Image 1 (cartoon, chains in turn cyan, purple):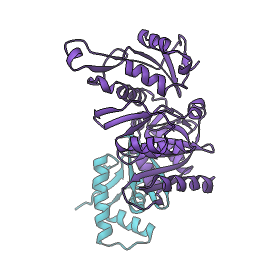
Image 2 (cartoon, chains in turn purple, cyan):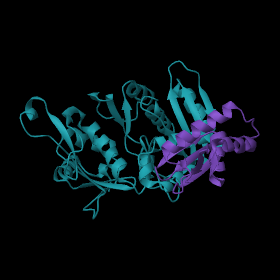
Image 3 (tube, rainbow over the protein chains, first blue to last red):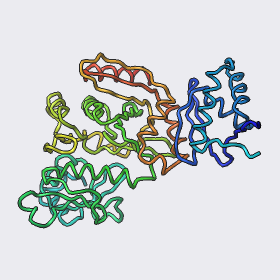
Length: 95
Length: 304
């Protein structure tokens, strides 16, 4: 079965500010801001670099942060992708 | 010419005829009312503010009137009018001056989109602004009143007005709103400071307004650069605790306290991000005003 590939919505206008490992993301389209931890912020930046399925995104994010690829990381990515889809920031990449 | 330069009869005439053009910070308001308590409140609490003769432009056209009808006689009320329409339900006549103050805040919050407007008290010392966003009941106005009575300059007890271009804070040093126990706290600590008539049983409890210091009013065109963002919280019996506050959380809270963040969009985000960059960010829990004032004065010295 083909894995679901995710990407950042092409029309998403995102602006970032980072202090001490905490990130505030401004989604200009909705006018909302989101206070992110470093894991979530890194995952979104990875997704901006290239679309990925959740397992690949977990690996890339964990590698960037020198974290193990474990169930906690996988769950974190799954929850993040679901949330980003709801917010209109990420979507399933066209096949 | 200031309000205090007008005798009572002239002030009452101008208000009655709707030709009092009052300058508060960056705004000119044209005010009309025949209600004596509002006239008295303006005479006392706005004494140092400039008035203009036949100003060619007013940002806000407001009036306070008594609704007609039988109620006028057995339970008198007051209406606040903005450009001739009533954005609020009427309130008891005894709350007329409080309604004037709330209405004036409403005018700024809903119409001054040239600026980024936050729900926060702002005071200044040494050219740097201390910005205090806080929810109702956190002790923000009490702390603000005590700070300005202790030498800090009042920019506003309620609305931080920020130029999105320069990031500077514009003063709007209108009377400081005090509620319930804080009225007596300030009256007892600073007996020389004028406090207007109390309005009882308002939606916020008992409300009274403190006259802003003359120096703050006289320098109401002097902007200030951001210096500190402080989230105060009064908690009875607590020890003083001033703690650094995460900058990312500070930005989130500032956005949450902004009235027109979504109206301004990205310039507001950039403006508040710069403000956080340029400010010391703290939370403050206190129960003793003396301790809080002393600590914040040290903050002023150590940060400048």
